[in-house]
Image (cartoon, rainbow, N blue to C red; front, side, top):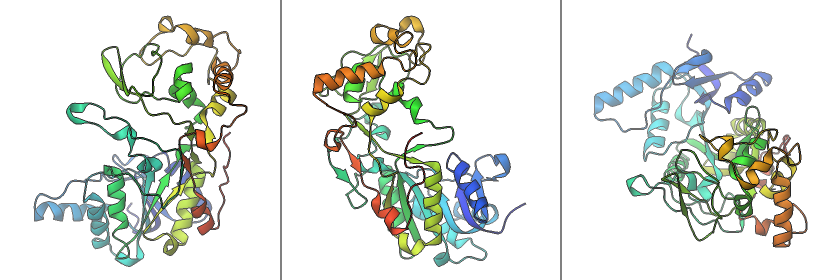
Length: 366
C-alpha cells in the first residue's frame, strides 16, 4: 500500500537504513524507503540518471515519480550520483510531481564521502580502462570549507547545492562507515597484508585475481603488475576517519529538524577522531589469526615469509603487532598514535556537531 506523506524518504535502503529506520521508529517519525526490487516492504524504484530522450520519455519519468514516491519532508539520497545534470533532474522531478508538499517544503540530503577532498582516488580511471595515478594527499587539516577536488561525484554534489535557495539541499560527506555488519577490525589485513604495505599504509584497489606476496613498495612507483594484472598502489596515508551508522542517522534527523541551518551547505561527518592505522593494526591484528589469511583467489600454500607466521605468532593477533613495533623502531616513532602531521590527512568535523548541538554517541571504535 502506497504511503502518501512521510517525514523521511530514504532513496536507496541499504546499510544506512538499518540504523536510520530504527531511529525514526524510536522518535515517532514516519518513513518510507526504496530499493530497486522492492524487497522487505520497500518501494520498488530505480533512479535513472540519464537525461530524457524526448518529451514522452520525460513524461514517463514524471509519472514514475508521481505514482511511486510519497511526499516527504526530507528526502535522503544514500547512493552516489555522478552524471552531470542528474541531481538537478531528480530534485525538479520530485518537486514537480508532489501531491501535497511544495518545492520549498522538501529538503534533500545527499550522502557523500570525504573522498571529495582527495579526488575520489578509488573511483578514478584513465583511458582504455587503465587506473589513473592516485591523487596526492597533503599532510594537513581539512574542514568543510577546504576546496574539494574536481570529480564526477564532487561535481554532482556541487550541482545539488547550487539549487539552493530555490530548493533546500545539503550534502553530508561521511568518513569511513562502521557499525552493524561493518567491522573496522576486518580491514587491517586488507589494507596492510605485509609489513611493507603497513609501512606506507598502501592499499591495492584496482584489478582482480590472486595476489601473491607483493614486492617491497616504493612511493615513487604507482603501479605494480601481479599475475599479469595491474594494481594501483595508493599514496601513503596513515590516517583513517570513521563515523558509526547510528551517528550518521542522528545527523540526518538533526538536519531534518533544522534544515534552515543546513541549507546550501556541505558538511563533514566523522566521530571527531583521527585514527592511526599503525595503532589499530598493533591493537587488533587479524580478525581470525588461527589460520593464515590467503589473498583473494589464493591458498595457504601461496603464503610466504611474514604471512606464514600468522598461524603461530602471537596466538591471537598474528604478525601485525610485531610489524608495528619494528616500524616504530625503524622510524623513531616513540608512541602511538603518531602525530597528525605524519598521518597524511586530518578531517575536522567540529562545525557540524557544534551547529546542531550534538556530540557523537559512538565516539570510539569497539
